Length: 95
Image (cartoon, rainbow, N blue to C red):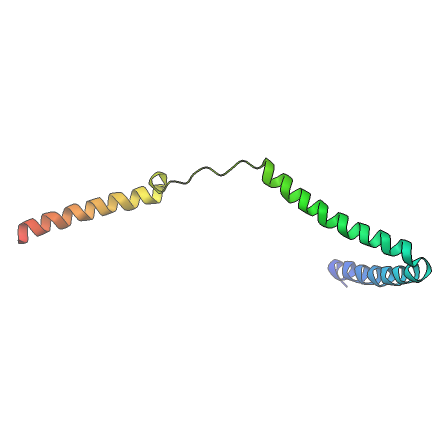
């Protein structure tokens, strides 16, 4: 068994043990366990929402992206200008 399989086996056993312990606590102290479970679930969702809000509030807005300042666009424009100039010269000589 390699390391990942060992970690997977430990997670499996710990999860099943957690389910058994939670079930025992639920039947022994039903109201308290349900209150704690509900509190932890709601608190976890609200902590994640707060983290997302904090991240959005403290992240600076992205800089505006201009096509004209992008190097590939400048290359494309210069190639277009070059080809258009050759095309115009060709049209003048043929026409």
